[in-house]
Image (tube, rainbow, N blue to C red; front, top):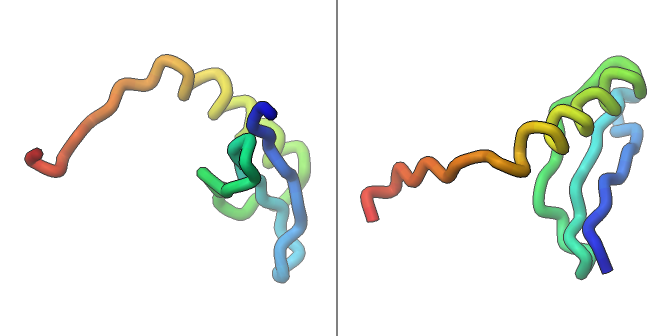
Length: 61
């Protein structure tokens, strides 16, 4: 099963999204947004920018 974005309203009536892996584990969660439209734009930004994102390993390993 592929991962999915879930759009939801938090306890403060703000909109957030979370990205779940195929096994149901939450692997990313957003900041709070005032509207569903801005939350959806956040999802689209992650989709557009994360696919080719580099890994910046700052652990020194």
